[in-house]
Length: 170
Image (cartoon, rainbow, N blue to C red; front, side, top):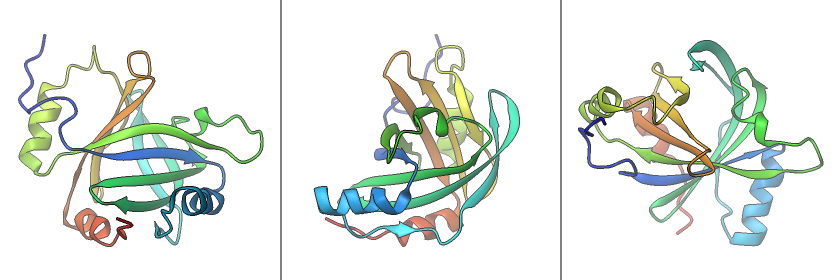
C-alpha cells in the first residue's frame, strides 16, 4: 500500500461538479431553487487536450462557476467530449443536471507533486489527466467505491486569477 505524502485523500475538498446539457438552464435552476444566482460563465467554450485512459483526447466544454462561502459549484456542458467522461452521465432526455464529481484543491506545486508521486493508480485509477495550462488536474475514477469521480487540482497564477474572479453567493 502506498503511504500518502500528503494529508489524506479529501484534503482541500471545495467543489461539487455537475454536468448539464444546457448551462443557462442549469444556472437558472441554481438561482431559482437554491438562491445561487451569481456565476462566472466563461465566454467561450474551453478546448483542452487531456489524457483519458492514458490516450490523448480533446475536450471542448462550456464552464460556469459560483462560490458559496468556502464551497464552489462547477457547471460543465460538454460540447465535444473526446474523453466521454462528462457526456456519459447524460441520457439525452430533455434538460439534465447531473452530479459528476467533487474536487479537492492542492495549494502548491510541491503538494501537487507529492500527491502525484504517491498516488496508487491501481486503487485509484485516473480517468482524465491534464498537466498543461492554468490548471493541472486528475479525475480519479471512484465510481465503484463512491459513485462519482474525485478531482484533484493545482492552479498556476493564471488559474488562481480566474478562480479569484468567481463571484461569492455567501
